[in-house]
Length: 342
Image (cartoon, rainbow, N blue to C red; front, top):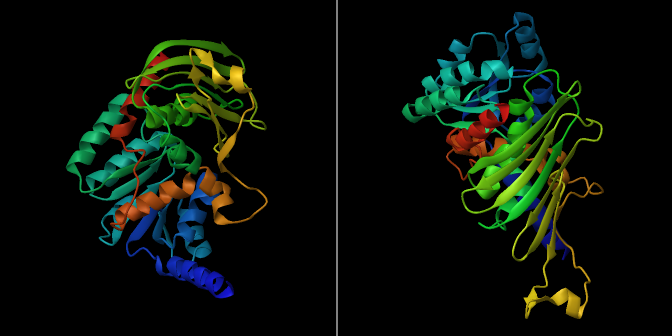
């Protein structure tokens, strides 16, 4: 048994150490999100980051000092002229994402852009047209579409489910809550259940922000109700989805766990639970274990950040990948956002 355990450990080590991307990459932006969430994953994946692009000359010099073998630059044209660069990550001011993404695609490079990739449906269509003519491909940073809980849930959703979904945060004065925050849950339900249209929505606006209730009808037959709000608390931000299917009920909470409660079914039009008893068996399909500090329990993995970055890098390296957040896949999400904005 000890030999088997040792063999497995050695195999995992060698697999990790030998998995080194061959291409070179660049990164636009050096904000808190990049430093805390994206750079650690890029480092873990052994990505050869050649440039970090920033607007400030002072920051560019500090980048060159702080990061070994990475050059801080302010001129993106210089980076795009570098034939070694195969992929570019963008995590800058959301208002600048459209122009930067457009430029990178026009230069034939692959691009990973944090959400939102653009500020309007019209800009999104322009990016899609540019991408069609480009040698490069765009991945959008919508990490919930890559979270292990949601990837597992996707396997179980069918065309005639129903769901309710609550996505609640605190006040958001620094940007557009629709494109910066609500894009996540709207994109996720499109990913899980297919394209949708808004049947009804109601908005309450106060000095603290906005709360929306949205009734969606998906083309495959699924219906759902979403509560979107920035009137709650960041200290107790909350995300929960309950999905009712023929076989049973699924529940997800904050991409931390996926629970399933099977239905006992009906006999002669009578629920079996009323005949044989109503004892419930709750199955844990996925759950983050905070006790064991291993990769699978790292929050960067459970939130989906790892898988989205890995997928982009794998695409650039001609390896197996997922693209659950393409530009074309966001068309319906932007249509819904336009409708909600009114």
